[in-house]
Image (tube, rainbow, N blue to C red):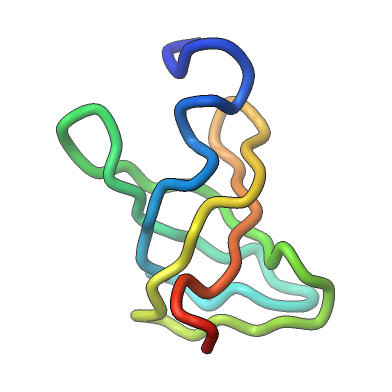
Length: 76
């Protein structure tokens, strides 16, 4: 699977929203991992949250192979 055991390699990583994340949306984030950056489908970690394009986020949960749940990294 490429990320070690479970979500150990993804949870806590920072990324940036490249497609709005929010209720009823399948968003997209770019996460820096393995010496580069990769796109992942993204959902808000807290129901009802909306994260606009450009928001810096933290990966809260990882569902292999390409889905993450994210929260704003800097409280906003």
